[in-house]
Length: 198
Image 1 (cartoon, rainbow, N blue to C red):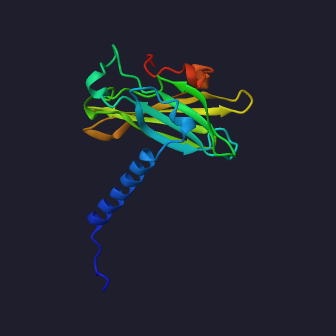
Image 2: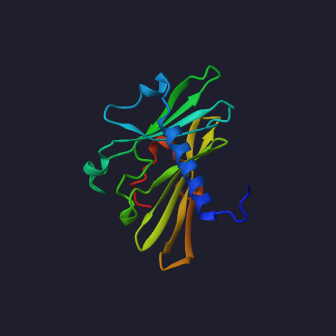
């Protein structure tokens, strides 16, 4: 028997659970040995994301690492507990090779103010990847940092750095700020520092 009326809140809850479960499964899947050996002692995988990072049609991998006890050890601004971001490129043999690492591309666990951990994820698409953040308290903000692959130099460079801000009492009044390479020049992924003044 088909119900006459769908329970929309229940459906939304089920769909949300499925998304979270899928993400958890993705992040908890075992890493290949050629990737696992690059995780420093005391660190664990916070986020793993697959996609084509260098436009060769083979799946590549971005890992964001963290220390499981970072909430207790991180001291904002003075000594934030860093979260390394590692870029691995894949091959036809389904092996992975470490191509780049940056310990200053992802905000620390308590860099988001009252909103808590600001890191929201990694997005990969056709040679681009973005590091996404959301934080604040009364004033809310987002920051999305995008890097683009250069086939000529076989490296990733800062492409765009920007986001939006608004006050929680007036979420419709949004201010946007975006910088491109015309402003910051040519910045290799490994040299980017999210903690520097904008």
